[in-house]
Image 1 (cartoon, protein in one colour):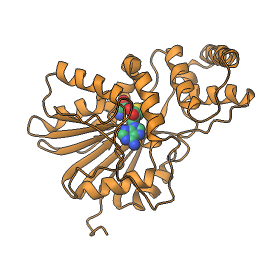
Image 2 (cartoon, rainbow, N blue to C red; image 1 turned 135 degrees about the vertical axis):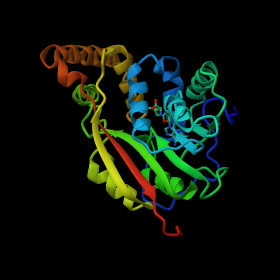
Image 3 (tube, helix red, strand yellow; image 1 turned 90 degrees about the horizontal axis):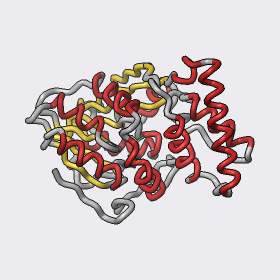
Length: 294
Ligand SMILES: C[S@@+](CC[C@H](N)C(=O)[O-])C[C@H]1O[C@@H](n2cnc3c(N)ncnc32)[C@H](O)[C@@H]1O
């Protein structure tokens, strides 16, 4: 297994450029900071594993395939892909957060997997990967952090003609914890966008894929519900992502927001337990067009 670490907190983005009018909510440094902080406890929430494995389960893969796991995080999808492609297959697992990659490295070693190469880099710009050389690009729960057309165009470049792209995303407005956090935050003057808004409907997924070099698009709506709500983890995930987008709250205001969020979540869990744990997701799968890409 190899990895390339460029700096302490984030990885290379050399040569990153895009003429496309697409944008991401966060800078790469902010993403690395958010996920470096979340890394030690990220795998404590079994929901992430189930969500990543569900995407891999619906993605067409064959033994021996060469696959990129874009935004691998702690490597849940990469390890599930390794089971599908077997020892003759190879996975390049890319993430911008060294902290998440450390967890992925340890988990792959513990599982005895030797065909996962870790790459600390921006998954939307992969100059080290040859054009038309990859059988599948999988991105579990990561595309919402990226400039979507830039990412998909780059993945179309590295895929063989007919190669598979597959990504997961949450439906707009899901999950309840995010919606409740944004409602509580709004009362304190924090206007936080729904990160799932851009890709959060089947038609938006189809449009994005068809405009970036893919066809035969399939979008599978599904649910990956939270089994045991860990409110502390839900608070941490929401507040870390929000803090990168809006001016910092002072300690007192943040404490008050935390209490309001936890109260509102407890109330939701008491009055509508099914709704509180429901997470509606979309799995989008497409093939790289057979036409020559310009
Ligand atoms: C919610 S986690 C998902 C991780 C993993 N795929 C999973 O399903 O558990 C999102 C991951 O995307 C990574 N990420 C976001 N933007 C990225 C980019 N442009 N390049 C590489 N990694 C990125 C973050 O560092 C983080 O590890």
